[in-house]
Length: 506
Image (tube, rainbow, N blue to C red):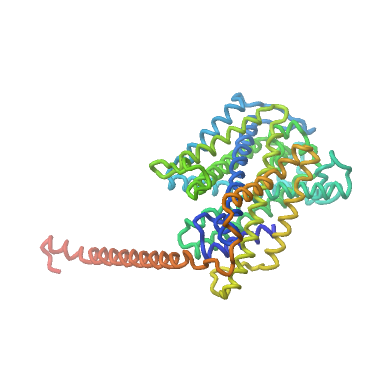
């Protein structure tokens, strides 16, 4: 959590000083090396190739078993949806594709509605968790049994044995369980850097980017921390439901769903399932949007095939979006009834690696950015925003991210052997091959000379654009005041005009 905060503040500092049209990938190119920026662009793109099919698979599984319940012994009481899961996958792919072809205003309004809905649902789930913990709901056993933090004490506790079936339980099992959870935590936090993709298009980034990053981080961290605490209160780490393979395959192992199944009234279970489906589709929509724009940007910079530059009349990158949508059909790998999530565990390995590489490059670029400022004698007081924990926080986060990236494949190897090990690290090799390929075709490129890097490029344009926007706002305000004054004079003269028409003397 600390190094996610440092990542956001590092990105904010660089973006507010001198934004780049390619977002944080462009910042890495500017301060590190063109080859590193090229490799990062394609590696980061992989995240948007594998996350959408995972979300669609999740939505299809939950939709298929949306009305399932669990009896008092923790066994599944199946109530299968009559529509087959393959049909739901096709329906969901059609929905997310159609949304991405909306106009930018309609798309933005829909994303605002979805984001607001997700926030409200999380708040409602937090309240629901408190009610269950405090004994305010009738349980399936017939009583009102308060939990009162019982799940935070032994033999439950927050430090579960995540790999107890693969390794011996004990301190080693607890540590490995904790480490395995860190992979899921990174997967959950990935995406908060998406604001760094559009910083080059933001109006007045020196004002709006710090505000947006602060609001994003505060909201995400606040809701995540509270939600995790609530989950720990209502769901024991050794609950048999969490490790039930049948329930896992049916998408019924969410801690909130587990808690809802403990209640005597089961009406809340399909409601939570429906919210999970909306969450998954919303994530797919935003990932397709960002992935298509990232691919389109690579094409514009001649780092992807020229044909991907084609856009519709409304400016949407048609072929880039179509290519991203094709990857959604990987969700049909989840059609295996016995192990529908097995393939997507590999996708988690791939996407967490892509996210880790992206964060490492952001920290690397920030360290070199500060060095460039020092070499060129630029006072830090000239910066609009300063990362509060630099340099210690930045260096700590860089080292922590690197260690995590190196050792994160342990769980994958334990559970999936050679296949898991390869998928945990293949994108690192992919990143290295891209850098080597760029160096082969562009041997003249070297690490950026920090003493000569242009720290004014685009800065004057930003100032002029800001001055133009401020002048435009002043002119619009002046026009509004004039219109208000004219309207007031018309209302004041109206009785006199009416009096003259009636033959009265004013």
